[in-house]
Image 1 (cartoon, rainbow, N blue to C red):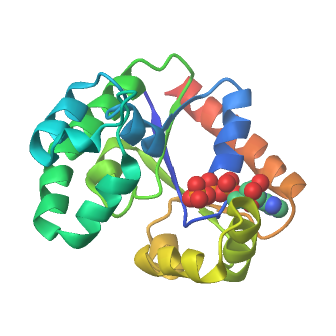
Image 2: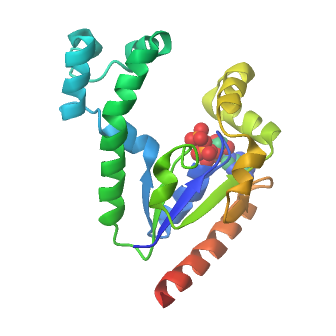
Length: 199
Ligand code: ATP
């Protein structure tokens, strides 16, 4: 299976791109969704988290109390490391399995941390969705009704735009309107479908 990685900073347009590719029949594995799936109600990782941090970390309905967990790992570095060591291999294994099960002509791994983690080792081509920082900020503030400061803090913790661009095999320029983005996605899909068909 030919696997394409899609990444980009917050609000760069990853979802706008992958939604369109999904409409075209391509299997999308979204690392953020997988990270939530592995700690969903009834999952073994959730039991381990409850054993480690105490049962209060699970709500009465059996869901992970994300807010409490976020607060714990924000305060306690050891707790953060423990959690990462638990979840990292489980998330990676689930991503690999879902990519392996894909039936489309190629599959996509979409991840904001593709280049910051070893997830890039799972892909043959790195696509970066790129937008100017002012656009990332404006689009995310509008989408999430968040403050500029909150979004700027997240942007500051991510890879700088130029560093990310240096690591791209293909760049999708999302500085114009959604129609321009759609045209680029269709062109990319045609090229990838042809290349994977030939291979
Ligand atoms: P995150 O990392 O936060 O998941 P993302 O990279 O997936 O973000 P999107 O959610 O796809 O980004 O895009 C951010 C917002 O900007 C969305 O509301 C989306 O509809 C909008 N958007 C994306 N591209 C454009 C564009 N070219 N013109 C106008 N709005 C856009």
